[in-house]
Image (cartoon, rainbow, N blue to C red; front, side):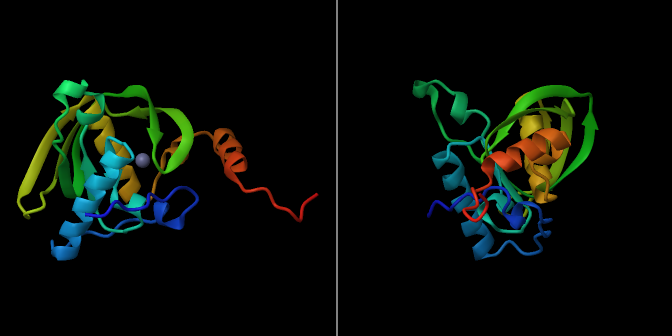
Length: 174
Ligand code: ZN
């Protein structure tokens, strides 16, 4: 199961809306498996398909593995296809980072609790009641499927500073 390359801003695939999955075929299963490997390798606690350059609605996450003590480390990845936030409640400010926006952290306001519906890799409906970090991961990854990165939550000023910092220097401009 190959680890895929994580795309970073300003890649246009991070700004595009991912398509609903109608048929969980072999390619989708392979993509989900690759995304899991890519997430653990990074390492990260969640990944959306846009981040490996595929514009389909899949997210994967494991909010425990990265923070577990070495002796308790046990991979338990979750795949959700076509995830939708059905209910959101409360609000919480916390710092987030993103594998597709390297060297950037931002305090982001998110709902404190969410109920998410979707389907699993076998096509069965699934429902999650999430709070805390898991609620935040769901909202962050579903943002990706909508073509939104952490940068869209930043002020115009912060966004511009980041863009300028990551731009490659142009040799013709002296
Ligand atoms: Zn992200």
